[in-house]
Length: 177
Image (cartoon, rainbow, N blue to C red; front, side, top):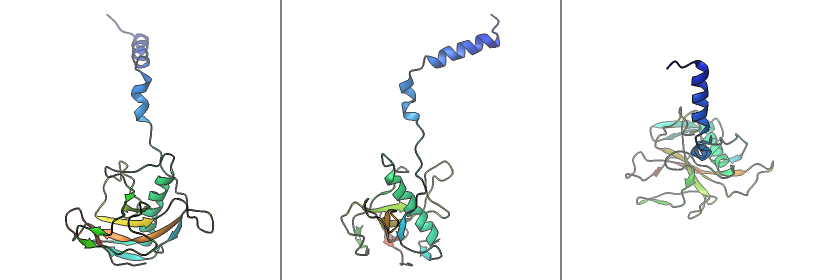
């Protein structure tokens, strides 16, 4: 049997059109958050903060918090990575180590969240950005507060790292705000 290009094309089209559409429903491309501005009460862009083995500038920290807040503003809100970042970090006790956050970052409040830090970030779990290290930015955004220009008002709580902590725990990094 000799198959012509036209016959092969018709055969291919009939096979692909016979696949149920619902099989492709879960393949929708995920939304990427905008880089919408936030009002940031945190380190300025030129700050330099050592945390674990890494030193982050204020811009890296800002980008992580901005990306995390904008993920939460998507409809529906989205997360990134196997650990679903950003996620609440609402406990001041980390494997027996007491963590100290400012008063504007209250304990037991689900609006205090953590997000991975990467240099020249933000972390987005995309194909070129799957890995993150031990450091996290902790920030507070209640979903409603706005700065003077109407952008989300986001408070910096601090940085923390797994380095030097009990397995799965954190220690705080020196504040460099």
